Each structure stands twice: as structure tokens, then as C-alpha cells.
Length: 315
Figure (tube, rainbow, N blue to C red):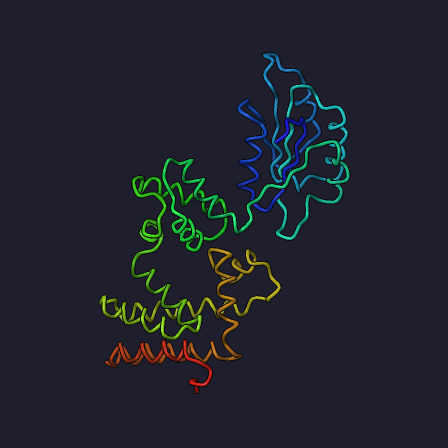
């Protein structure tokens, strides 16, 4: 990043923006303020010569909240910035934004270094591997992919998860096994795989996952509970407006990660109108049958086949 006295960083991830801002500011002490708390005196403080001669810096986090007159003042300062200072604006934008606000871009274009900060989806595995290396552990490509599939694509969550694995498995590093052990118990992972196969309409795979769980003596009601939980999540996702962004849809549906919304929308699309509601009734009936003494393996096999069955087989 060029050593420019005024830097504008923009992107979707506040976490990545903060890290990039710290790199831009260097090792010298700096102040920090949120955009909504900005006041004109901050520029005066930045311009005041230091008694000890050290470089002065200021980070404006959430700079998208700056008012128009504040942007104008910063643009005026950027024409003649104080020597030996660094002012960094971190602007968080929506997924479809092409840059900071039109006003900020217009006022600071040519007066500041403006740079996008972000990671493309296809680059995430390599980013996870590099992050693990920084933490002093290894990460396999399969492990990086497993971590992304498990915790989602949010860089802040991924960085935190890498740190957790570094603490829990310093020798093994990030592998599919350590990801599974750290973030999903074996039973939970098997239920997850069963639900993905069943609601993905992959009949043979769903049957194999179910049989493996029964052979491992997983509790039938726990299996049924996992299927019921996934079905409720799919029903909530189905009720969210299709045009809503994944992050907003995740909050509306009560999900932890936006990647769940994308996956669940794909699964919802495989079912016709009213089918998911009908399946909810079937789950309730299966629960009653097992509790009344029905053979769990038979009840669950029929339910999974119903969920994963081909259109010609459903009736």
C-alpha cells in the first residue's frame, strides 16, 4: 500500500478493513474514532506538531457514517495534509457496492489513496492456509475447505476459528478431522451429512448415512430431532423474501451463518409448494410412532426415503 498521508479503505468486512488500516498506520501510536463520533477538532489535533517528533495517525472506523460536512473537511485537509501524519478512513459497504459513497469518492478522488479490501470467495481457502501459517500451524486444502463449510465465509469467524484450532490442535493444524472435532461432534456431523443428502434429494447417499448412524447406535430420536431441526430451518428460509441478501436473510431466519442461507435455499428449491409443510407433519407422525414402540430403523428409513425420494416415487 502506498505511503499516502490520507488513505480510504473500503470493503464488506469490518474485520479485514481494521487489519488493513492497522497495516497502513504502521507501528506508531494512533488514535481511533467512529465515523458517527467525528468532530472537526480531530483534524486540528492531527495537524498539531508532536512534542517528541513521532509520526501521528488517526483511524476513522465505520467512516461510511461520516456526515457530508465532515467529508468536505477531510477533503480540504487532504489537499495539504500535515507532514508526518497518516489519516485512514475505513468504509464498510454492502456486498453490491462498487466503492465508498459518491460524495466521498468525488471529494477525495485524487487527494487520497483509495483501495478496496476484500477476499474473493475462491480465494478463501488460500487465505485460511496463510492465516494458519501466521498462527504457527499447518492447514491442508481440505482442512481449509472444511472450515469454511463449517463456520461460513466471514473472515472474522474464520480467523477466530483458526486461532481456536491452533490452541486445541497445535500439532495437527487445520484438517477436516480437527475442524470436525473442534466445531461439530461426530454425531452432529453425521446428522448434518444425513440432512444435506436427504434434503438435497440424494436418496442413496441419505440411506447410507442413516444406516451408518444406526449401525453406530446413534439414538433414533436424536436422529429424528436433527432432521426436524433442519426442516424447521428450511421452512424459515422459505419464508424469507428471495431477494433479501444472505446476511440479512440469515438473521431473519435465525441462522448463524450466511452460507447456510445459500445452501438451504438450494434445498428448498428442490421441493414443490406445500411439500415442506407436509414433511413436517410426517416428522411429527414419525416421532409418535417411535415413542409408541414402532421399529425406529423402519420409521426413519421411510421418512428419509420420503424426504429424498424422486418425484415419481412420492405420493
